[in-house]
Image (cartoon, rainbow, N blue to C red; front, side, top):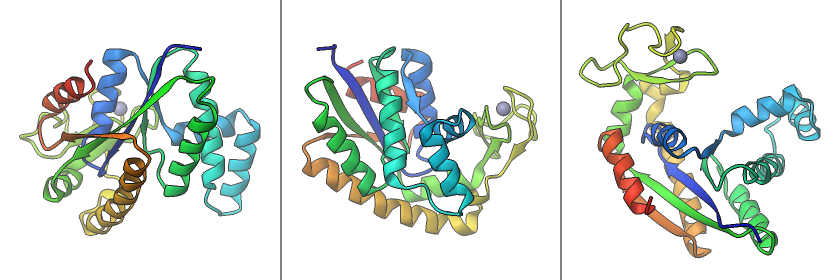
Amino acid sequence: MLGTKRIIVFIGLPGSGKGTISKLCVDNFGWLQLSTGDLCRKNIAEQTEIGKKIDFAIKSGKLVSDSIISEMVFDWLCDSFKSVDTVIFDGYPRTLVQANQLHDFLMNNSTSLNYKLDIVRFVVSMQMVKDRLSDRIICSNKNCQMAYSTDSTSKFFPKNPQFCDRCGSLLVKRPDDQPEIVGDRLETYNRHEQELLKFFVSNQYTVIDISADQQADVVFAELKRALHL
Ligand SMILES: [Zn+2]
């Protein structure tokens, strides 16, 4: 049997800062972070079996099914565990169906895969994320996607208000960060998050709460303590 592999599922509202913390973990510990969006694009580009299914779904105007997403994630997981011991899931599982599929996969492979799955919930106040999302602009370069704030007192305020500090591309507002739709989006997300948490708790997974209203470095320090790193 291999050494213990760790899966850490990040859960939190958009704007809770989990993307930033995820990047810090990758940079500091050499972990891998799952991005289902990137994985879909990669599979399509390489025309894998899964990529063909995704491409077909998108071209027929359908949502990519939970089973296809999960199948792709499990492939990625097995592959990633060849080179690292810890991975972060941010944005997966997104639905209860996906959470069930993940749970079944881990159960079915528990003899060959010695794993530990923990949930980290980034707890933030609704007002805080509304403010953060309304102020958020991101780099338009798909390979960068660095987030900045339009609030000039924030330390994420870009050096040049229009361009990315890292790659120089134009900074844009994401369509779903428009203040008028942020509220609805957060409500929907909140409902899904509650369902997922209930599922994980009832299946005896550990849920660690991190208070994410603070600055990124403080949140990161709290995470390290909570995970005994
Ligand atoms: Zn950039």
